[in-house]
Image (cartoon, rainbow, N blue to C red; front, side, top):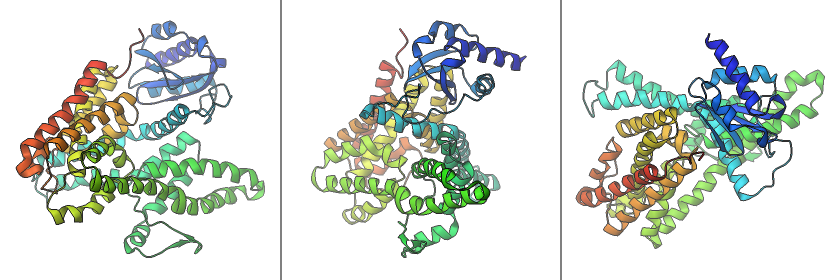
Length: 464
């Protein structure tokens, strides 16, 4: 019966969006079918909404998005079967009808966010699993309830699951990005394997110069937990692989295509496109240092607004590491750490408002899940990749909240005196030491502003 219902739903949806001939491409995320149509005017929202099982139809990102819920993958499979192979990702840079889009700043931004979303959404289960197991270890572990000791096998297992998920995150991201960009998943994961190999990490730790093929100097970068660098690398791989397939003769294709593709990609990945993310964020780190030394409160506002982006690029640890000696010398941090704490409270505000005001039951459930793992286990990645990088309003609310909280902390002169973590993000006021009350006020503002914005303005305009 369920199979029949999925087949019937898929058929009715295809008809409602204008028929097979009107579908240029279709993909899916956690709850939605995402159609790129040749002529969006041929699609009928009323007809789509009348299909049994459809929750809502949304127009966003040059797509007709049909919200179905958590069974979307089964309906998607039926759509693919009925479209007969036409269900494939839209070629980058096209408008859904084969014509090239005009590259405006908005189109470029939408393409970047679309690429990130398409690569990250499929690996959300990794973040969820890691967050839940870590939350168990944090709540029941020796630092809190004390029900599990550090020697407890359950405690160790929970930490193994969490650490394994994040340590090997480039593997998951490589596979997902390969699906998004139509590259070989196996070749993509080979590059991830090279980047995460223990010997590669040893080379990076040693700090000695290393050349790819003895010719190209490799930038020494630790790629564990890194998501965005591997997404960029796989995007490049998709073009290199297509070019290699054109030039390799058929009689050596089986051996030649994968070998030549990887041989070309190694210097591109390890010497150019992988490090480019760290170079860009290195500039951000230098800017933060300059702001720290010159403009004070403005620096806090900038950091509070952009800190999630710094985390997304994996540059929060290098920034903190670079600035820690200066903090220890003077005994406090009045810029980066307070602003980062404000940003973390803004995350909680967005998560709560998203859980209450998101436009679907599934989206609200995601909000509650992100809020729980963040508030109880200090795991922010599900929110970062599940909401922040996929919802423009969440991004805006969070940045405003982080900037507002940081501004208040700067005006009040709240400083961080304790440089170790305290577990729960809402306990971070303890790190302000003698300025705990001042820090708590800034944290409250950082939490309340995005919460209020989300509750008042919501996360998506109604069709009305």
